[in-house]
Length: 391
Image: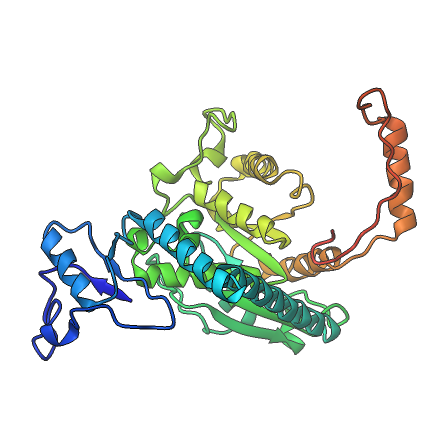
């Protein structure tokens, strides 16, 4: 039972606020299921001891005072839940907290099974799902429109135009025209996403930092990465629309004063790449708006970007490709789909056990493992137990 302890709360259509006499029985009511009375919003200045005492007249016992927004009082709630669960377990032999944890684990396992089943179906029918992600205003919507030769996504110079994920299927002649091969994939499902910032805060669903609309839009973008076969991370090579406070730490990556990467790469770019790697998704880097980069700076910029992403994602990023593009020009995009298909094939590949063991024997012979307690460590064998990603 949750109640707001704020005495100054707005009245509803019937003019009711606070606890009314009709709601207060005055004495504890018999009940088969334990009920915990929780008084929320206790961080507010107008909450008094009298307002909490008034809640006791509901007959549900002493209220647990907490503030969900500030995280205060949650330990008291956890302790009360543990006590109630122990009492139920003593009476019935079943601990509801353990049951809830097992149910949550089973639901997560079922969701993972459904996801893998969907991936198997995509592989069977040669469908590739490509999520286009990046911070705001790097050209994600323009990339989808150019690849599909459509205006499916709303592209605008104003950051934050895209709110919901937008998907468009690429197949047939258009797939061939953009460098795709029907031998590799019958169709490619492209997904445009909202611009991402502060990924960790988005994962915490911190609506205070972004607001509910932006938080929901960015969570949709992260879900698109989870459901994709390949994550395509767009980077803005022009350095436009960059908040100077978000730029990467030049000292952490030992970038000299003339290195062009220090003016275009942000912490948001690196966190998005880390998230894709943690989700086990192959990553394709696109340096978009390449025509804005002066020719003398192009090679140093590419080398610096690859070095930085290798440092952040190592060792999983050793094979991460980086392409240079201009999302407005078709000719610069014809390597995107073939590269994404190659990444998907590697992601789905399985290495034979005998080949892995030959590799293991060669590595151990070149550099034997250290001994522990005077005894040598022996590796018996190595095998791959899963794909997507290879594990």
